[in-house]
Length: 121
Length: 106
Image: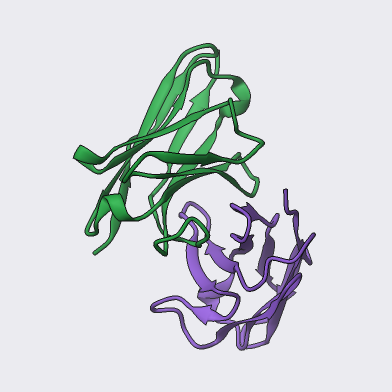
């Protein structure tokens, strides 16, 4: 069974750094792109970016370029989403999801369970 | 960036009735369009990809159609478990989601 398991909820202060994770199992981790999706409280889904763990090729939405860093460690089948300086507006649920095809032009399936990030002073 | 616009924002439907959700792209996305269902407190679930192909395990009452800039998700006979928020997503040019349509009980 293909599965993505995300790290637990985080509570941080503005200005702090954070790295959340997404561990894949049940498939060849290096062969499929993985993406990150933001969902702010009570709002819709936002496509943040994707990474190909095989060679770490990474693509960002213009809205998130420079705001976050997406990375992967293929040795432990884990993708990451990282902030260097959090803002209150980063408070959201963050989902990782595997692309459903061996191509960056693909849908998301399956999804991780989500990581809730709360940034508050 | 391609903008995806869903309508209506909220759809009130009685169980057993048909629901028709629309999604429009600001430029052609070919058939590179997916639909997802999200229930409160849960991660989204893929329903449809390639505009019209049902994902594994998705009931036949869900169907997708369209290409280019106009797309439709139809739920032929709403069941209680279908009341949720539905999102379309284009993946022709990286990815963008629509703002969602909430299907609620009438």
